[in-house]
Image (tube, rainbow, N blue to C red; front, side):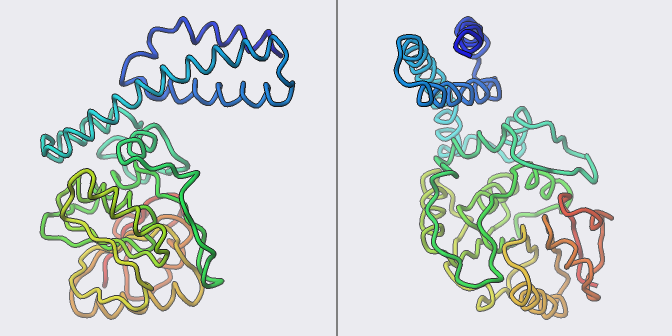
Length: 294
């Protein structure tokens, strides 16, 4: 085992392409390998070979993290300075995902390099994110929306600066922040867990965003009269989901609204008689599905 790890480590140490900022995916893979070496060292104990491996991986880890930090800081400073128009930032983001504008009916499963980039820019560590016990059996544990799903939403909903998007169960705020950055539409996150809502506000504030809001509240007790677009990644099920859908039905009777779903909630949304699918994506829970009030 040590010999195999040593061979792979030598290859990484000699791979100059890891120093290219854009090569984030390769650095992520290398850092995952380093985590594996750490596990092997813990399992074997601190013999001479294991200690040597660990010393080398720590040096490589420090180097790779410093390159990532430079990348994140460059984006962060330019966003803070207002240097990016939405289309310019989108072109930058497109380099870190295989999803492309204009693609239809894409199945999005799991994170990719764009999620690593966005988390790095905002300073989010999903694995150590604070959480509290679910307050209702119909609530579902937090899982962030893959960033490319939001690119898909922006491409196919046609958000305008006068739109107001609500994200149900907004967690640490990635959806709200990306929507505002990439479309200049106003975006509001509804999150019942205060230990997530607070950090979301911090992440938006530290990059200077003003067109966003995070509301620490029960989704069933919020006024949505200014909303034009609503998004959910199955934050709840059962009675809570149906109550929210009934609220949205009332909103849809007042004006035309658009509803975007990802995850198992898509199948429930598709059963509502007051909406119609506008993209034929309601047949798969890991496609972004877009509906309009009928």
